[in-house]
Length: 375
Image 1: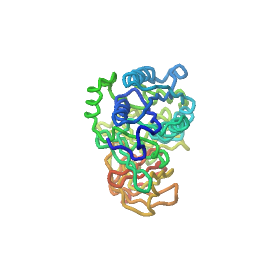
Image 2 (image 1 turned 45 degrees about the vertical axis):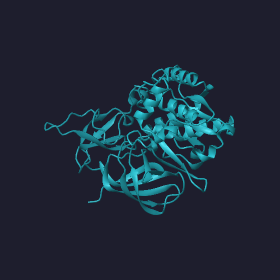
Image 3 (image 1 turned 135 degrees about the vertical axis):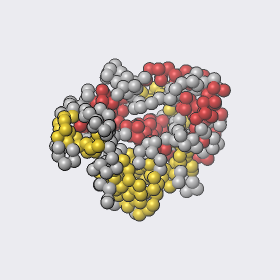
Image 4 (image 1 turned 90 degrees about the horizontal axis):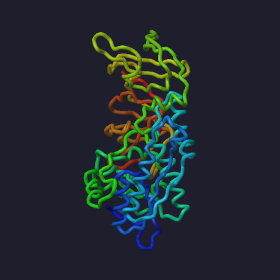
């Protein structure tokens, strides 16, 4: 693990508050910091109460028990930081209102910016900590001018830089990412050798506060179904949808339309909240609205320095998508036009795009609209 020069000398430095999620990655992050000579304390960020919303299935109680056990094993102080109300306001409301408007929001990126590296980091600093640490698989580099850059994790299969694309420089300066220089098997091995109590715990999946619950089951408690027509691009009515919040661009299953006799499947190609219309087509590269090269991005966030006015960069259109070559034209500080060299399938408004130069994460933004692929 690389030692951040901002923290030396370690013995005299203020402690770091480690966000212990209950998972193995954050537990090993705490372990590595201790081995490197840092003073640390642990904290669990409470963001959801099942008793308030029993239709979600947040595994928080088990996570709290696991985080508590890790802190006890490492012999470090531990606390629970209650951010339930703020999480509801900044993440859950963002999620619900995004779907209500026909967007496809990304609550994980918003949680990182607003909660973990937002309110939780502010709490840590107010409590006298030097900053906070997480178990994200990313690497931070400190430059001679005092600025910090963020880079993909060494383990490309576990790299989580995409989810940090909306972070700002002040947030990065006060953050540590101890596991970013290791791959997942190494992290598991560290946990096992140190006999951490959660060494064998499986990685969590999906939206943190939903657990195994389907997103549509959650949204139906917030958004009333408003049925409307399912149409083709030429206006032919094929059926009726249950409510636009239940669909996203590119969706194949659960539309409510049978496949054709030759096994061609319908796919969602348009969501129009103004007319309450869901547009579909048979899956095809020529399906109107399904593929596009050109996108407008808003809410630009630049981690170290502003994006250039014109540049050829790489971008990950969505998490798990490989980096693609783009041309970017900045409109102003908040907006840009992005041109993918290869057409992209089913990019939906509200999703997050992350910009890269090699392995360095430059920043990100939200898709605001798309234009059809040029012929």
